[in-house]
Length: 485
Image (cartoon, rainbow, N blue to C red):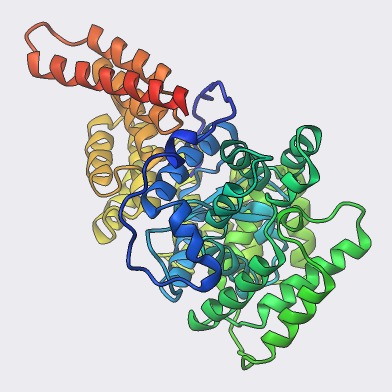
């Protein structure tokens, strides 16, 4: 699914969090943590950690290239949930998202948010290697390594908690930029607080490897991937972004290798979904379409990995160049052999829309939507195809049902706003647009949209007027609270 939506301009200022972390502590929970993490609960109760995570997530949405790709989201979330289900000390739901960045990196922060750079899957050789990094990041969250920094900061007045968290935000999303900011304005000791300590890395390695094994992946992939990163250090002046916040001394590599030997070697068949996700990233995010086409034709000649996935990547690169006649037979063959595959369904829908066959796309997706209701790949493609086919009421009803189950789905909200606009339901459009903007913490702009919505409400619609006025008050209050942070 490809969407060309307007860019939302947001004024991105450095956020601080003194209000969130300075409230009186509430009663402690009964969770049992390892000795290394006990102090974290005293410094940052779980509900405050989640609140900080939400504010940081708003900032990331507004200032970073977060990818809204339902197929990749579905794949990443599936792997992430499989790992979380096999992890210990999970205290709140996890969420996983993609950053469009070719650097090898992944990061986790307060409240169970895990970000993954597209470069990570592009450079991973198999699904276990990819999952090993996710398992490592999940361990950073379950062991509350960032929360421990708050406790350390309580005994170190050289750097404010707010400044430290803002630095963490900068560093995990764009390590080079974050380190440059810190180097210019803080001491080296301040920077050291923004990188995981050796003890935290060892703990995340150990627990992440155990989670990886419990989830059915090859635990030895952790050693393979770290060895691969270590090799890149030797041959490159600039280390991979992942290593800027995850120190990799030789002792850590050796420790992971020895620990990996404790697990049996698992023979795991290559994952088609992993290879399809990797091809999609290479075709649509890490390369321009022309370069991607050359890459996939070369890989198909060399047969580097799954021919099926390489054909899929080639089809995307052709589609994105409007070479529809060349892309169509490849996608038709893939879909014929695997008609329920979400990767193929999504890209076939893109092809039909590009061919000006939106009505056919709606028919193609209707039965699938009945078969898998509210699956984000099928339902959002169905709604998008309905919009393209000018079946606006169908799109609106589909999206309303979807958002009842997934109320915070940003792309679903954007599509619903589009559906309202296409029908000239301007009050609903501006209200929906306000909802989208609030996801980015842009409460001033959201309040402006609610004010516009009020202009299109009939004088007799008293209940709607009252609801919108209450919403306007809420956004203005949230903006004041955000400004105080």
